[in-house]
Length: 119
Image 1 (tube, rainbow, N blue to C red):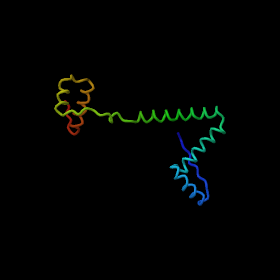
Image 2 (image 1 turned 60 degrees about the horizontal axis):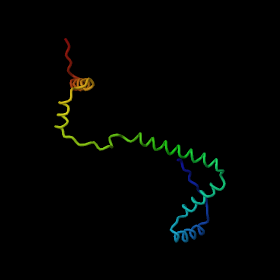
Image 3 (image 1 turned 135 degrees about the vertical axis):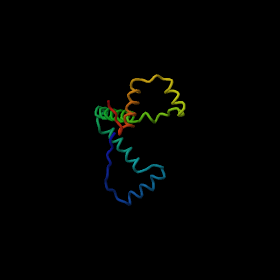
Image 4 (image 1 turned 60 degrees about the vertical axis):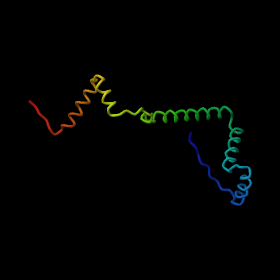
């Protein structure tokens, strides 16, 4: 949900007095203003329009959450630790797949870039 910052002028002396007494209620001027704007919004904006706006806000929130979930890398999930010996044993026990053979050949080619033989 996008937010808009409101700025306006207000007499400093009045603001100081307001802050002094609002602190006694353990509130903030910003929270009081937000509450007042929410009540004014509910009083002035027709119910059908509020319903429409809130449904749009929910859609945006859902889309943001979906985007965050998709962008989270799978590598963050904790994988059980394996030792080098365990990995080598697992590789030796499993028959090599065609993809693994291609990768092994590709690695061998990378290692011998400077040496080529042909007949």
